[in-house]
Image: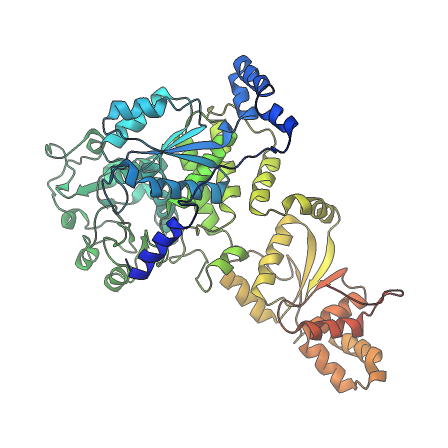
Length: 581
């Protein structure tokens, strides 16, 4: 790690107050009355309510939005067995991600317990406090046993993110990657390097979504997991023991459609890729140095699609795409478990989001990156604001349909709206305005119809039914930009397109503009030039002539230039002294 990053990281954690978390009250405590409600005597009423009906704990306490991140620090990513105390910064970081991305409150619980039974006893005893348990950085094979025992003993979701979070994102990437290259889950051969907790969870989920067990070959540092192998195998690995004479990665990778690496740096040599099937998927997820660097993989196999765990390469497999939102959906329906149906629902929600057109917010966050579904973009970005409103409802529905929801959601549309309000904090203020717009959609002309932000906005407006957009722009440019952005809107069917270079109304517009401005010295030739070259002038003329109900302009260029044309063409209503924005 670079020296400046080391210094910055330590400064970040040491800046007062130390660490990354604090506890904040959600109710006022300003006077004696507040004190009487929050504590004695008023608090007794909340206690009695829970005694009568334990489910009421979700309505009068924070339990329904509270998760414990529990670890013993025996398998911290990139650091190994550093113990519970040294793992605390990681667990605090996990808590920050829960809060940032899904609004979930977290206590980090670092447990000084290596013994499985002791760890289970400690974690299980926390059930009255929390709505869910996120197990973190616990080494295999103990993590399998700990999770299984806790799931048996507890009546709240228990989720080992290192296993299942990784598995969900990997499954989404493979699901989409195979779609891109035109292959079917039930026909592909999958080879792994690594057979630890995360790898086994990935394979289990791949089997659940359709990959045949007999098509999976797992390898670890000892070689191929095979029938009859005695050394360094645990029960979970036994499911993937193949009846084969092959013993090395080099042997089993021949003809493979998918390589899944969850092992160590540089174990996948470029020459091994040459024996893989056409258009292979290569998921090299060791961090920070993957099993093979993407440039080497593409050099050896230009037809490959490559994913890593790193943010500086395309197709980052990142658990933050999953865990905040799967817990959001589970908590909101009071799920007693996170089951396979909920995981599969998450896989498909993430995959479908990558196939949708990109968000303008995401485009701004990631600059010039290509965010169109394809070989360089097969899973969404972590800062895609739509993740919560896509994944949490899918998880909630799966929980209800599979019978593990104790508080089913009655109005799913209202629930999605609530999630959107979490992302877009202005949602409560704007909802009445948006509802009114939807009830009576107006014609709105966008002067800068070629601009990317405008095209994104038009897609949303059309999807939501808020208005009937009219875009001004050159047809060829608009068509190309729509394709580049992966949008679904189409000129002449979804919206009206006014092409400044070829529109039958051109003569009408310049003639009318000339009438308005002739006394100010505007000649017919000047009028023609303005209408041909200024999309703001065209939009203003459309509004002036009643061909639209509203106009939007000024996404680029000088404010005063746009305002001048609006003044000249539309002018001020009688009694209005000035215009403002």
